[in-house]
Amino acid sequence: MKIFRRILAISIMALATFPAIAQDKADPRVKEALDSIGIKYSVNTSNNYKVVYSMDKDKDRSQLAFIVSETVNYRNLEVREVWSVAAVMTEYPGQDVIQKLMAMNSTTKIGAWAIEEADDGKFWVLYTVKVPAALSPKELADIVYFVAEVSDELEVELVGDDEY
Image 1 (spheres, rainbow, N blue to C red):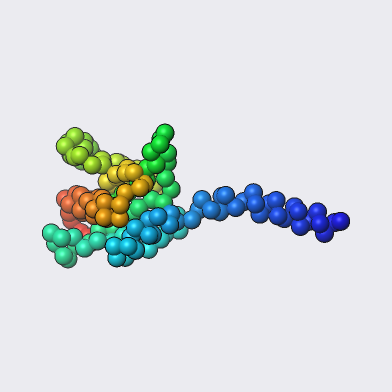
Image 2: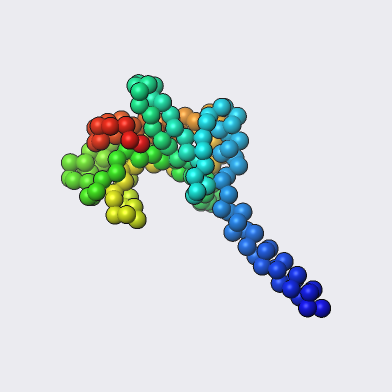
């Protein structure tokens, strides 16, 4: 009887943790979309997809973009985030950078600039787009390249080098 209780207890604990484990996996829909159009990627420890693009305007430059596996729902809409870093700063960006980002946000049709403070106290200037999770593979690829392209253009201005 003790063995039965132990097995039952272990089974219940395993079942209780299964949803948490399942949610920590990379979204297979993104994998399927990227694989179907031949885009190379890797998956990071946060289970987000990393794509590195060579820039069409300057083949010597590349840009890293992330496709977030975790999605959120609003009513019947499932949304995911795609983002890329343009600069990492040791201090909060100055007024001139903030004004530039706000001006760019007012004219862009897809996405927006954001500033996030990292755990190490640095400030990330990044471009982010929230899109329906059910985009076609080609639409997803276009969005990811767009995010990379916009971020790379500002990286040239703010950083000068090709760091991200």
